Length: 341
Ligand code: SF4
Ligand code: SF4
Image (cartoon, rainbow, N blue to C red; front, side, top):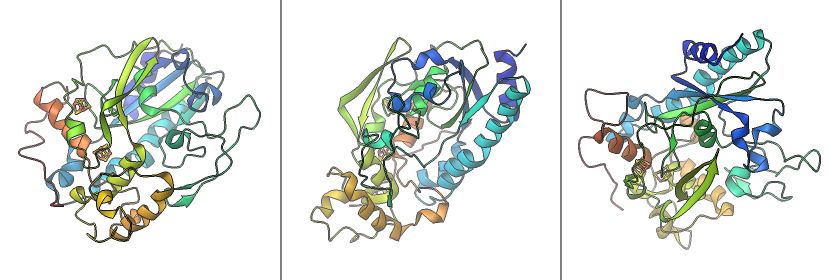
């Protein structure tokens, strides 16, 4: 008989750092366009895989001298190579035992873009990520529009793999925010893990808020959801602003940016200081300006410049000694760098 222990062991032998299992009923109450039960109605279990992002992948960003390795290895390498390999092998293992494995990897392409806009099914599309994207419609009235796209951090929480921090990042007890996730939905009736109930990971230190160059995380506004009977809360993130900021719009965190790139925008100065809200229809123009300074193609993935919340959180968690993955030397030795505006 196939057991949870067998599946977890197999996933880890294939290369996942941690594997957790949740019950599909824990998705009860989630919005239709994010509910994986529409992807695989017979699924009984969700298997969550954690892939660590080695700390050294962001060393160059922490020093302010090298920005290429993190997007290419920490995003693309994990999302495109490491995680799909584990999903493929573990999926075959499940199917060899007679259970279907609906894989769910991380990707930049999202059909309904509902996660960014909250407007699934709308007829007209604004420009998104520099491309024209058409909103999708459901194939029948009772179904959500494709692509249904799960909330990865909630899915990982459901698998008992960690907490959602104030920054909205998934924090695991091993690696804090330095992780990526991938999932399999299966009709195998596996014993679920409990929700994470270990030592508190996010202590609301707010270092992520203070170290965001784009001022994208709100101190006051919060998002509150109930997941599998537990109240969960994180800070309200302005996704558009974050996207533009980590791509390099913010002068304080992008050494590649042409200081005059946004001069023709009536509020250009506010833009590069993170003092203006970014509208979805502005993103394409902003993206062109940023891409002219450091093209996405350079790294093969969106090249994040800031890493502000991520690096601040690592520093905070390490100082509290809370993570089980220990290092001989501290991640951060002094004050984080910041470009002169
Ligand atoms: S930086 Fe502090 S407040 Fe932000 S997610 Fe990490 S622990 Fe939580
Ligand atoms: S990724 Fe950068 S811009 Fe986005 S919230 Fe974190 S620090 Fe702010």
